[in-house]
Image 1 (cartoon, protein in one colour):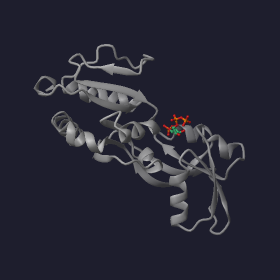
Image 2: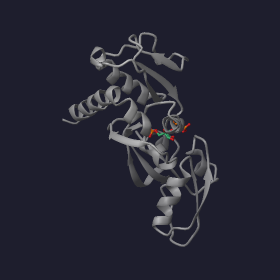
Image 3: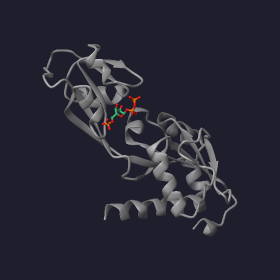
Length: 219
Ligand code: PRP
């Protein structure tokens, strides 16, 4: 398909480093784009395909919508968690159905969430946490942490956490359990609003192919 794209425009795609980038690259390779210098262990951050039609760059997941909103990237692939936590002025085009996990409230098995008793909640996702607890009128105070959030209840910094749970092994290994799943999360294809018009010819076949791959994997 790469050779069928009749355009001199290079398409820039921001990908969240890690598993999402790996999966997105597999799809781009199925489209005929080849990234010979890519390897998951490389420290390089920009990779351009052999035909110079697509350039991908690898960034931290919260930065994907930033690059796309500003137009430095035309497309981006990032988790729904990031889009909810850091809303951006971009088009959300497709639910790609990979990178599936859940946003959960987690804590010690004996944690009781008592209505009207203020909870202390640690999270990388304080906006998502606050939206949830506000929606059930649960008073809470929030502590932002940048990672290893499971430590907070273990060390007595918070009563509970709001965090991503994928396999559940991080919780298990730290003696915590899911108290309540609050959101289903998966990867989303997002686009810069201007690029979608000006680079339509390059972007549409890629959107269609991502859509087909998503459908195939669900059947
Ligand atoms: C994420 C998340 C949990 C863990 C969940 O952390 O914040 O800690 O993965 O995965 P699991 O259910 O498969 O164990 P990440 O690996 O991104 O690192 P972090 O602690 O630095 O946020």
